[in-house]
Image (cartoon, rainbow, N blue to C red; front, side, top):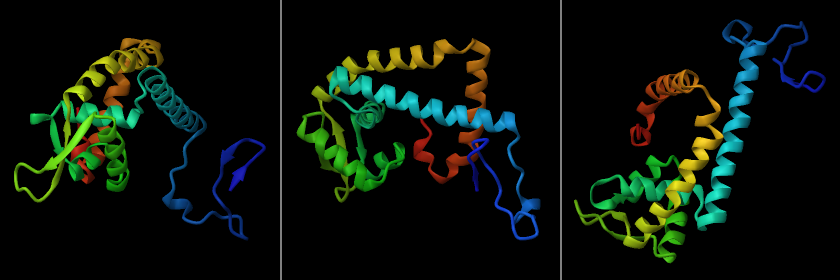
Length: 180
C-alpha cells in the first residue's frame, strides 16, 4: 500500500493489523529507502540524459551506441544476434528491430554466422565504427560530467565495489552481460 502522506511504500496489513509474511521481509529503513530511491531517480535521469545527448549530437540512441560498443569490442567486430541481445540485456525482438534500423543507416550489416553458417551475426561496418568513434567523446563527457566528477574518488570506488558485488551475485543468469 502506498502512503501518500509520507510518500512511502508500506506493507499491506490484514484485518488483525499484521502484515503478510512480516517475518520474511526485512524492510528498508528510512536512510536505505532514500538511497534506493536516489539510485532509481539518478540512474533514470542519467540514462535519459546520455540518450538525449547522443540523439541530439549524433542521431544515435543509447541502445544503438551500446550495440556499436559491443560489436567494436569483439573479435572480428561481429556477434551472433542472440548473444548481442543477451549482452545488452534486451529482448531478441527489440535487438532485431534496433539492428534493422542500424542496418538501414549503414552502421551494421547482417551476415551468416562464421562458426556454423546457421545463425545470423551483426557486423560492425567501417561507417558504424566512425559513428562510434565520433559519439564516444560525447558519451564519455556525459558520464564524466553527470556521474564520475560528481563523486569523490573514494565514493566512486565504493559505487564500483557495490555494483561489482551486485554483478557477481546476478551475472550467472546472463554471463554475456558481464563487460567488466
